[in-house]
Length: 301
Image 1 (cartoon, helix red, strand yellow):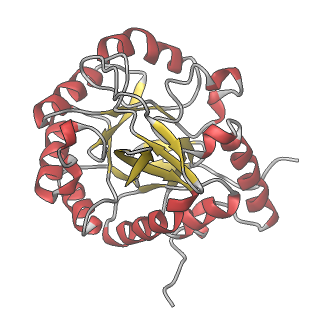
Image 2: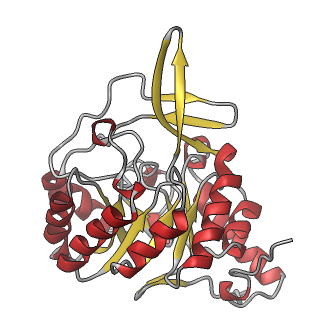
């Protein structure tokens, strides 16, 4: 029986067949995941964070288990833009699902340079401009901690990139809505949030600062997605602790147009496909013809 529900969503001019995608850093470049499922089923493929030169990442230990999630301080390990263009993007492009490249820079100019090079790559449909990492930039604050600097990065990328620009925000700020409004005014087509919350890993008498993700951050992530969705007119891609259909629906009801699945991929690599099927069934059973019917429907007490 053919479904009566249209799960497709639009991120600016980009149409996704469904609202589910991987969070950057949990999908790599699809090489391992594609051995387990067909990436063409995803709403979009989101790459691991890419930098201009190759990066070996932070010293070990780089991950650790928390009470209901995980600690990570990977440090953007990646093969660099040259190899990504030569090998990784062509691999991802064989699947019929839009490619969103997560890009990272150490200056405004570096963000712009990466964006300019990717502008001519037809297989890439959008950039996710990562101004949110808490564990890189030589222990400096992320670009996303300041509205003015966040806007500068967004403007620089927008000036050289013709397709969809998504800006990824950090939750580790005082007023995330103000930063969202700044990048919207600077030309962002969409906003994704949240990246990890700052946390610590302690082993013996040593401590490492990095990011916390997983189910434990879901309430805080939901609050920020709701705040940003209320503050901007552009689409929001919500993420942070999503591992069940109920979680996914809460983010959409909080105002998210699409959602990204992160840490849950490590415990169940098939979770995104399962959630696509569950969402389709839920909408069919509840006669929800499209997701706009439930998006942003939460009301404050």
